Image (tube, rainbow, N blue to C red):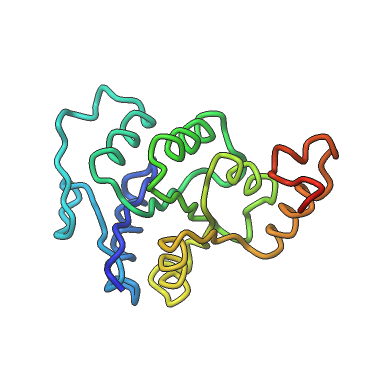
Length: 182
């Protein structure tokens, strides 16, 4: 398997750098090419900035960074208690502007609420993975699966997604591509 280009976004730079260190030291480090900021002092995939980030909003900064480094998988660490309008806009923008970049949310599985995860899916997120699994064989499996176009969604949540689609208003079946012919 060719290494997959992976980047991490987090509004807390210290936490982002910790996540990047975990990615570089884990079992999955051979399977990924970690794209990091040149300021973080990492050796792989250094990026160059065309201009200072000081005058940019967090969303502008992330969009500019993703546009510049073009990761295949973007690990996003955002507030897990609720999906703020700002985070929803960021996720939607990333998924719309960069269709070749798969956004996967890093979550703390115990605190992740189903409604939060459902809202993130509607923004275009391709999956979720517990931040505790970074560097493990499970993380490696997620990278491989998402790179191949699969979603990485807990089965319990997948059941809820299917029920949401199944129990829609019969007049809305055209929206999900279903008709009486199958």
